[in-house]
Image (tube, rainbow, N blue to C red):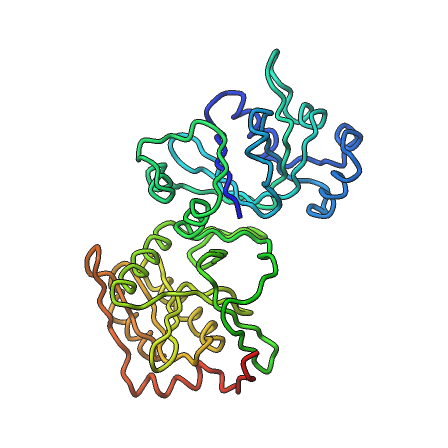
Length: 348
């Protein structure tokens, strides 16, 4: 997985390109474009964008080496005015000077944006450069003056810290832990942290790409560190309902944790619904469900969680959290609901 960082607001030319091919979609089947595409390029575009139109961005020959291994499903952060202003997912990618020059006519003596890529999806964002620099270990004042391609740990750090989920599937690989399959053929798999193809709520989503609200991602990161300081490892698991925010294995079973960016009634209801949705798929039988908030919800909302046996955890200080547990009696009653009373098939 790679993460591209692409300036998109610094010059009048760049802003014009954005308006022409990102703010609005391009009908690549139109006669002015179709005849410029090689058959393989046309086939790739049609496979990824069967509706016949897409958003496009590109890069000049100076960046050819950086794009050598970039491909479908990689993430691109569009930057400008000291912020990440949008996040996209790379679709078709190819080199075609003629097609590029029709999309983005170069200035006199200027370079062609001959590396062209479509966007499978695009969501708005508002991530300060300071946060992005912290994620990848750069000095706070770095301002991302040109195209970059992050790989390895730096790319993974960006995906984890900002909880970005591309829509493309991870390449097949042996599972890192056993899978559990229930009688409805739901396969559950622990998410290795290296994959970081995670999703959660508080998000903005189009067809494929999921970008979590930045405040929620920060809360998850903070609580994961808090658990780590106490010898607990927060994982995630994949299932038919999605991907959990956090999942912790304790001596008595699993704990499923759902984070929310605000403690209001709407977010409390969302956390409750999602926990009840994820709980039946817990890799180990769920013994605890926990809703995580940046501040304490109203008493009535805490009681709502407790009614369904769900604990409430909220931040007490920058590095501290308080747990308000449901009663043991209520939790015991609700465990049958959490598990959906379905017998699990043997681990495969």
